[in-house]
Picture 1 (cartoon, rainbow, N blue to C red):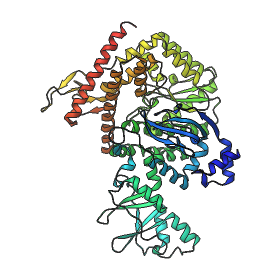
Picture 2 (picture 1 turned 60 degrees about the vertical axis):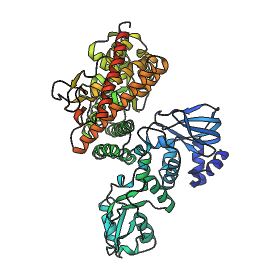
Picture 3 (picture 1 turned 180 degrees about the horizontal axis):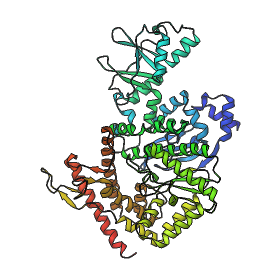
Picture 4 (picture 1 turned 90 degrees about the vertical axis):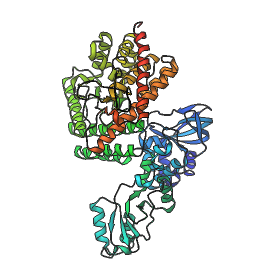
Length: 616
């Protein structure tokens, strides 16, 4: 263990720890060996629960087959995914024989969220190449955005004659950690929490003295056109945590802080997730959750990719669900047996949007014959689902919710229900029941729902279940009529009747057919993943889908998803309830053409699958 302590002590961020802390950390280290060429984790895998540091050898960071960086002794990896709760941005592969130390999240996260840790993470992320994505990287990476887009917090602004006491009181009232002091000739000073601790508490500046005696002057300010990444590095170099954004006319546009910029770099509402995890009651959770919709609109403003926004929505709903379970079990008492909460449907696939229902299921160890146990678990499901709805995340209107007895069972009852559904295949309900469960993902677990999920995988290998999912893949068809626009006759497929006549249902007509095709094809390929994109890739690799068809479906899925998120983000900005109906007249000609071509591609694949259905 002494060798591990000595090694960690030589490399940041561990070089800031004292001997005792290093020894505690070293006790948690697991030593791993990876022969050259071994994949340590793949790109897009679930969030990491560990970070690793290279002890000997090299580790390559790979983006879609392209080596972007080579890590050597003392370099940490896996921590961005661990901190953000998002899937891995790179593949990690041993470039040559590599010895690594694996460190658990519960030990590393507190270290990396301290000021010195934040500086280390910022430097490591900003100096590392970015994964290639479409559209252009500057649209996806918030730290490559002008700071004017990120400086949304309006600072407290005071006069230099105001007393330290009054300025500190205003900061407390507005929940601010700094105040901007306007001085003559359009210049500024700044007074921060650190100034309060050092210059007032430690050095003895009187609280009734003018704040000009305790402020830092001049304040370092930046113009609105500066890139966030450059500003963050300059903040680190200067050792400051707050930077006002000021226009050329001296107008204060907002305040930046290092933690906010670092959260942008991780591309997740880190503070929002923290607020959820730290909430002491349901009311605090509702207040925290109310920040998600404005966050989604802001992410679209920054041109963050739809898949990334969907992942963020899933991260937030997962965190909200886990905290609610903790709060409710705290009130009801300890659960009588181990349990698992499953996310189903779009949130199970990590493909949620603002309008997504919260499909869920509850599994507990034992059998439904224990009435006290069943009563406790169903009350838990009812209360958690009810609080999720109160926070803006309503349950499925068709009953796919842990609040309903049909989706809250013991593991034994779940296995029986899955076998029964697979064997009897009763109409529409059987289709929906199996499809929801095939997208299941564990969100909270004190036990093991593995046997239930294995029952699903076993059922999925049956020819009858694959035929059932093939039927579902043909259920939703892209609309077939054409709307005649004045300048673009025969231009776009739309709805013909009903409340939304003349509008395009982007979910039913676009996304659902692809999601259902991918679910069937993934099953037939033996893939365990729930992601639509990964299912299409696995199906192409296994020969279940033609690789070109899989590629086209993936591109169509991205297009439909982009339009859906764009539409709902705009609805949120207007204060409207988000839905899936797009006005085709609002789309530019190029988007309409791509949309029409995508519909045709989906229909073509469905026609091929219709032929296959005859032989199954």
